[in-house]
Length: 433
Image (cartoon, rainbow, N blue to C red; front, side):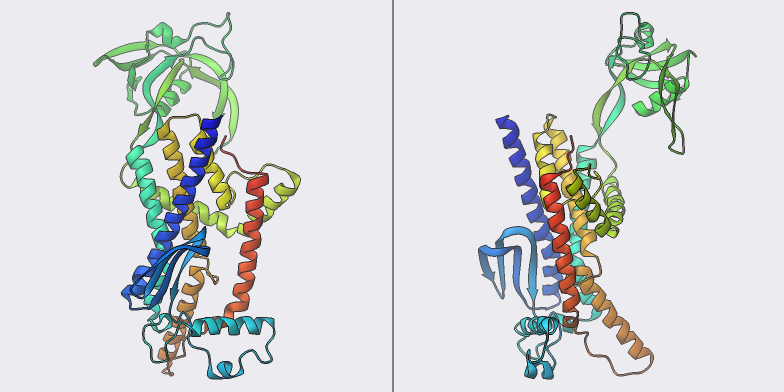
């Protein structure tokens, strides 16, 4: 029990470290192009809250904060300077949201050294601003591709191979039945198949894995089949007559029925089979589609999670998770009673999926997310194209501080949804086992 607890804690710690690395790479994706384009960057921070460690290199302070739930870089002049009237009037006569807008403008103005300073973000061409804001999510996507490549090409996918690991003792009545004294011997044993044999072909058809072998056998009932097997480096031909058992049959359209299928009684050896180099990127983009489907329905999914929190119902295993849930799953993987390689593969899969979630989530076109800044830059670019088309003076830079009230609502909504998910992951968590 102590070993399992220790393994669980190690799994959680690894996920925290993996999250910190993911955040660091995300912010690096913003930092590198910002500096490349000449923007003055005051801070590069991993985490929020009190600063645990920091060091100034050149004009930028690099540091780590206590709560590893995010990060940020502080760029000079994210928005244009405040209008002169706003600077003069301050908060006079303003309501709650007007005060928030002015606070945002004041904080932004503090990063400006003067209206003639060219090393500010808002003065960058629209394309460069989009590159800076896309850099973070793209780094998460690239990290996920690397992790999936290590998982699929470096380690491989657990696959039932054509090598026989064991033989069934009998022909049971159904696929889920136990052997009884009256059951006949399995056809594989009568045919002389032995553990360690590798099946090369069934009834003249070459087979690459156990799924192909099983499909041919299931379709053959009481009809003799010729199996070509490799044993001790030599090929042998064996004849086996499949028996029939009751089992579930899945139609091409996904519907299932119960019927008779062929049964020989062989059990496959499961091995890691390495995939082609393009399998990693392919898996990453497939996961992007799956995660996008969840993000698109995020409010509904969180509401459903909240309902299960109250009713105690079963959660959707493919639903959203908080970082607490991801940590719990990582702990379960680390504490599982399985080979170390299986646990490493499980952790890599979780961390890769988390980075895909960061990639998709940050592209939502709402401030304060990266997608919101991209949307603002695109809107300004559209205005500039429109003005150029109709020979009008270039428009002023878009003042995104006016969107602070909407940003405030988005932040509150994200905090609320995050709170529901964290509470659900503590009280009614999704479990792998």
